[in-house]
Amino acid sequence: MEANHLLHSGYFNETLRSWHSSNTLLNISQLIYPVFVTDLIPDESSEEIPNFPEQRRYGVDALTEHLAPLVKKGLKTVLIFGVTADTNKTLNAAYASSKDSPVRRCLPKLRSKFPSLTLAVDLCLCAYTSHGHCGILKSDGTIDNQASIERLAEIALSCAQDGAHIIAPSDMMDGRIGAIKKILLENSLGSSVAVLSYSSKFASCFYGPFRDAAQSAPSSGNRRAYQLPAAATGLAIRAAERDANEGADMLMVKPGGPFLDIIKEVKQRFPHHPLAVYQVSGEYAMLWHAAHANAFDLRTAVIESLVGMRRAGADILITYFTPQLLDWLKEEPQY
Image (cartoon, rainbow, N blue to C red; front, side, top):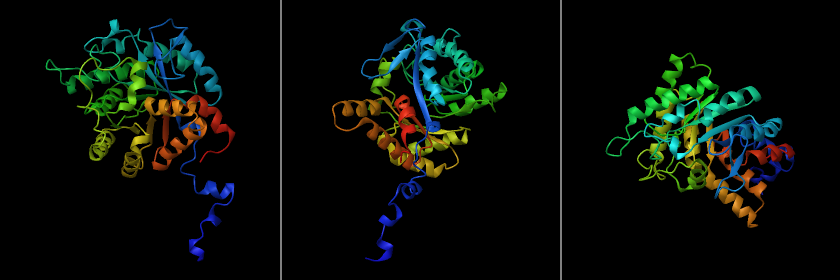
């Protein structure tokens, strides 16, 4: 055998193996934990979410209590989703910027209680519109893009003023990054609030458990006119380019596992933008159910799935497994 055909000599011990894996190492600072805060229940309560194992909706005070031990373990960032009653939902999502909304109520509390915790807020209209779509609709049922981005910018400003460090627009409207950046700059928040764009977000069946959690499924039609077609590589890259050009601080691919090729191409095209990948609710549920059916070990499968996203180019990992990972990643290096 010729010397240049020998590979084992390069990874026969733990240190050598780590040198081949530096771009795939997992650490706690990469993790973002998605959480649901609601006014459907008393502030001190929480409730199970159907079809979403071991995930809960939290009242404002219960969320603070839930996060306290995780912050002590090293949790760095949360992504906050609001859930409210149908009676608070209107055509223009007015309640999203109400001071009574669960998101606006929890932000000052979390900022005060956990000064080291980075607070990201998901920005979308779907949880607050009576029709469940991610934008404001015209009379014919199609998206009014301009009205939508103006409303999104207003909500972004209110969350930023309440203490959000990151605004994360997931609506997929054209021009919303520019509108959000503009209003933040006009209100002296342009340099102190980041924008994490859901830039390459696909229309996907893997969002099912999330829609139960957020109670945000559209009452009619679907979101395929603004979320990306699952087979559309070109649109995914153009969407990332659009948002980068409008000033997005970070980009995202969502879902993660089925779109590793998109993660790789987005990172190659935009190497200087941190890239987040969202391991969405359906991916979480598949891994959880398969592990509980003894198909594989949960810890091993979760870490392998996230390493795959890191290998493809992810810098930031948004995952519902974050509480477990805070323990798992302290046991030994994972690569």
